[in-house]
Image (cartoon, rainbow over all chains, first blue to last red; front, side):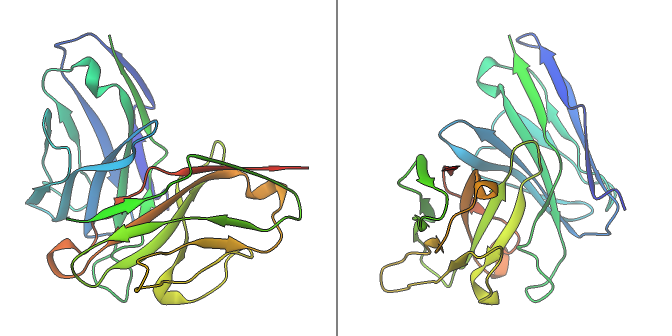
Length: 116
Length: 111
């Protein structure tokens, strides 16, 4: 199993450009989420999904879109990048159910995005 | 609203010394508390969760509901413990699977 795979690992954008961060997991996990990691701010939840076709906003959703058409994939879209979106982005997944570990997240390696 | 506070951004200790990373939380319901760790050039990973009541790599953490704290402790720190540590909180029901993280504490263990 590859676990959680994120692409690209590094990306530089100009203000106003759009792009999609890809996230795929091969563990058949129901829950998937996107976090951004900023110095001094820790990790903040952007968007969240409990299954295919179901998404919800987290703490900092503005400027980002998501969709969940399959169990495996959960892409994060930046429609018009801004310098404030310069960050490291982490995708995570977990298994449904309290006892089976819905709150035990498996993280991807991260995607470092710089917006100029 | 839920909040996780890690008061120390940086923490340095010498090898063999005890270490305590502080975490306080606020949450209106019944929370589940975690410590996640990120070693250099590795992925963020779970270190321990309060409901497991287990010791991982010599670390323990006790949930104190009265003080709303979940401090991480280790009696004898090792150099390989140097990492970024995040305290995290989640609830149940509709918030299951969503974690709220503190700002993190960078632990450095000197030889």
